[in-house]
Image 1 (cartoon, rainbow, N blue to C red):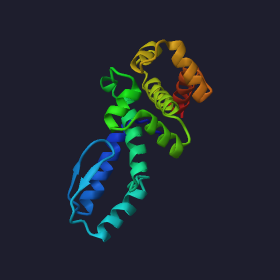
Image 2 (cartoon, rainbow, N blue to C red):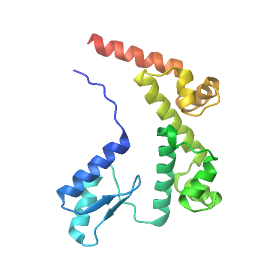
Image 3 (cartoon, helix red, strand yellow):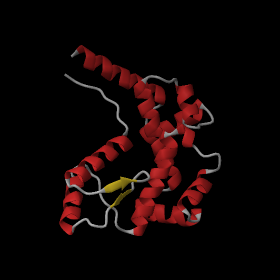
Length: 186
């Protein structure tokens, strides 16, 4: 039997973190996305055990300042893409500068140096991933999805979608439909 499911990666990650911290009896406070404050009284052994337990979920503790900045940039972008009401009324460059307290030029240089892609490309990839999830959910039309993701038109969404995936959104939707049909017939 095949099961289809939908999940929110941010909520899943927070639940895993909470579970692992509680198993190790580490006092903590959840902060922004990608940040947790732990008590000062955590032993070296407990900290190492936490790192090891998180590795199996592909969650890594970032201990260098530039790595932390990269993660904050990614988290801010994902937050914007996945939570429409958080989409800023200012440009994304201004939003990131204000949120992270760095000049946008510095942010883009650090991001591209460590990720080997631009912030703009990362945003496009995140928007297309969200579009794919919305198409799979089958609750919105392509017009509604393009509006939800702040595209000026379905044509622009389709162009970027094809550039990233090699498929148009309509082709992707048909493939998903065929796979569902096959799964239901098994």
